Length: 416
Image (cartoon, rainbow, N blue to C red; front, side):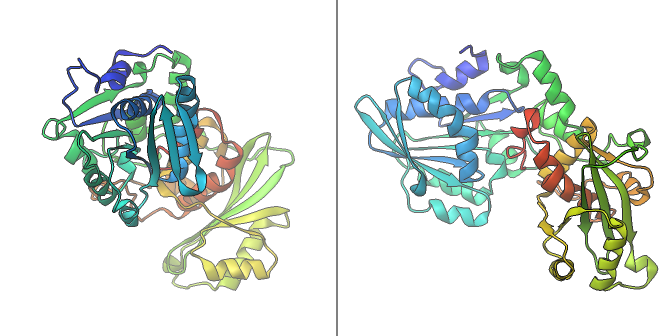
């Protein structure tokens, strides 16, 4: 394998003779597909196995599944080729690693929410690697750092950028020198294995703040329109000819608007061919679940709809639909990853909004990031009903069927 200068520095910073050897931690942040995760992982295992015997270490990701997928799936074969013997005890979330006469234990942890900090309490660690650290709660990261109490222990962080108000950027990236941490900032150009063609594909995948973060590697705030690329030129006439499949997506509201979209697939493209939108507050009359179920049936128009994709929080409405014989599919309601996926599908032409979907088109021009929320990305809870329903469909149906290529590796890492 050929490594760039930054990748080589990541691999060797802890070795004797390195000018960085006295550092207590390393922070590798920057663009996706820049090679930082692979190099951080290789370096971590080489350091641990050359420095310790019969010690415990932590491999942390947002979830244990993401540790296996993003880190171990690629690392384990490489380590085996270098003479490491790795035996994973899946049910116990433990990886036993042997090299020569040395053996160490690596525990897998997921840091997805505030309750995760309790999972790592009590263990004594000689070191920890935290992949996707910007997606983990501060309490989990601080608890992990506190568990590294063995003499000579070190911390290893890798992440894609988030908002500059994010706690990890404020407390670790900005204070790297104060914490005696080595910060190495990566761009796609720091990965020699990434061709210009692949870099161009990634550049076309993201937009707005996500482009600056994941392609340029910048810590920037999300601001302005969420779908700032969307305009009337992306709105098409409904195509002629038969459709292969039909779905309906729903964002259900009582006093808030209810939005429904009818989706048809033709030649690999999903078209939002028609919609229903009702604002109870503007109409000064709320509708019942039964009335909304009637409207959904009218929108379907006798077509063979495979399923209704709905937010599971609309429990009573979903039950009404089931009683009427509709198949109801639980929507994937992860907001940020869903927004990124929706943008990718719209830009690639895999999802198309048809003329006549006026309320959806209107909301695309109004749906904005909330610049009042510091430290995290949030959208304004207004003009978001068709936007939520379209996102449900993208994340639950269109994105699952059209999964692959450049985007598949970015979803989990992008909090998707």
